[in-house]
Image (cartoon, rainbow, N blue to C red; front, side, top):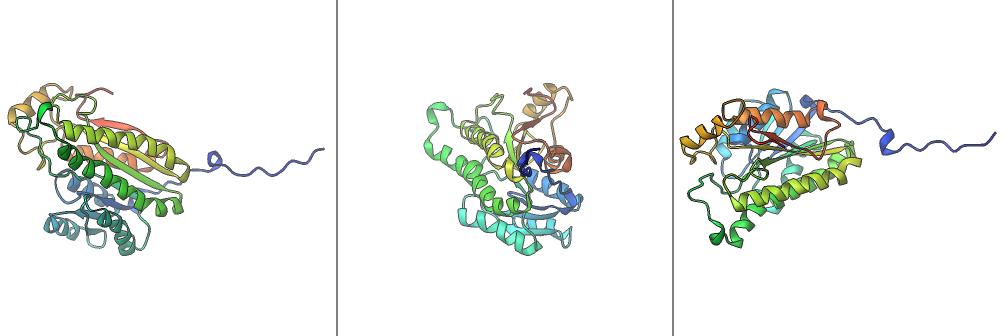
Length: 271
């Protein structure tokens, strides 16, 4: 008989930890208005404790938090200010008494979906690109990095980045916005590989034009109608419908899903 050394547990041997939505501590950038408010409310309705990140909309964040006493918490979170991005995770963890389990990178920096006003290719300048990269890449990077230690310590983390179907289908070439979202998609996939061994999943939900948010308020009604006509469902997606997909990626039902980009636009764009 030969002696065999005891089998050392590996990552593959470990049963993944699944923390239900009601037990999650969530930080949402841009969480007080529009799509962000819909995402905040979706988590809060499931019993989660949510740090509602805001930049200029403190009143909206406070009002939303007040609807969920003890579980909603307004947190200053300007994604262009790296110190504030990192501090928001510590503030949320201290307030709720537990590490942050879930991060949703939703904030959009100074952008309106107005095709007539967008810069054309000859007019695009580095400053516009830098602005969108600061909000849609560097801000999420800082927020994720701030949350990693707490997530890794628990062996559980859920990161959901908000993207755009314009990356797959740039029917309106919003060059700066789309380039930044494409970079965020790349980080979503590479971070999924890097963080998976720590029990952290990283996914993206990409919407089309939503009816209606502050960013899409400048969109002509004819554009909404054209989009609706081009979808199998015959209508434009709402912020609440996109928020449902964010919940899925944070839920135990998505425990084996990472590095994915789910397009939620009524079937307008495939793949």
